[in-house]
Length: 245
Image (cartoon, rainbow, N blue to C red):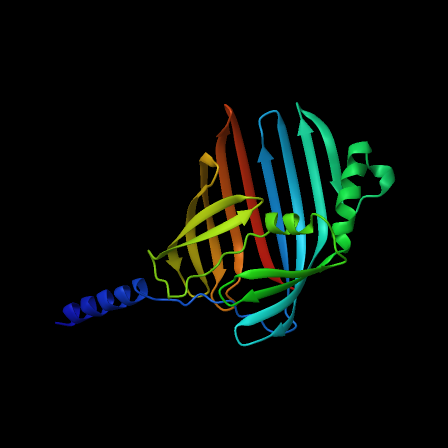
């Protein structure tokens, strides 16, 4: 009898864990500061580009269903090689004398963005809106969209096996990502993702995301994109790490 009761208790406990549901919501507090470190690699066959971006978000106000924040780039770097030769080697800490001509051109494009502050509105689901940029800087919204790996959460609770879909738009291209909850543990929710891109039917998108259960922050995101463009293989890998500082 004791063995039977123990077995039933074990089954009930296992079912309870498997059926655990979580409501995914951002839980910022006024004064919070978060740093996002994003690393991207693009393999275009004859050319390869590595980029790293660091962004800082300061939460300036908390409302009922909305957070206001100020975001700025704190570090940018890019290395471009073509046919095995380095074309650009730039980072925002380098001095002019350490840059080649292409690096100086890249710096001229990036320097204004390092000075810009983006004023954002973010709701608890993770939907964000760029309200203004000071000073007004051409190209900052495109770079911000490129560096935005944030997920928008579903309105309902999720459990292992739950799915939801986000659509992100950037420069006229829609990227549709479908998330499937793989694991729920004490401190995080882990989901796999697959996706597709408009105008690029050969694109194969895979990845994963780890969400902190307490803060609702997507602390680690990995996205891999592979596609065939006019017979050439194109690969893009993006990894984003978010931490409170």
